[in-house]
Image (cartoon, rainbow, N blue to C red; front, side, top):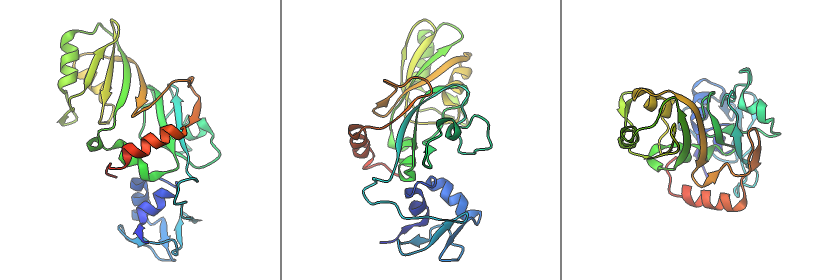
Length: 239
């Protein structure tokens, strides 16, 4: 059975589909000795080479793939670029090739998922798939009822208005927010628009997976029950 080249590469854990497209466009991929086009379809019989490395097809049952929950500390950068000091890959130092699903900016901490399964990245991240991400945020001045209402209804940033979301006060200077989209520095920009500065931002949960039992800097493999719930939730999600 043939599949698109970017999907074939992402399923092996080499990178995400989007990154695979970039590699194809940049001429780092060959199929049977020839440079392919975007949209090229391949099968397990084809020889796919990325940056000089032969890419082996992934197992159909996904038993060769890795799914990790990591409690990212402040100061770690969510990039696979190894030349970046404090990159997440060197910090975890996992034996197999993995990459983060999305990102948390350097000043933020909390839950981030890493995997060798590039096929699930977009399914989790795309806003239209509406998978929740829960954050605890602390700001530099007291929270007001107007602040909570405005944040909930949507804030104009980055030439758009953020989607309506769930926001609840958590102490004098804190609030919990549940997002289904992931604009660049979204929470910080939303707060800045309302005249607040974020002093601490922690992601507590992605979908049904949370930080329970994970100290800062620790990681763990997802459990069988977590994986079953994730597969069920992603079954009808667009990639």
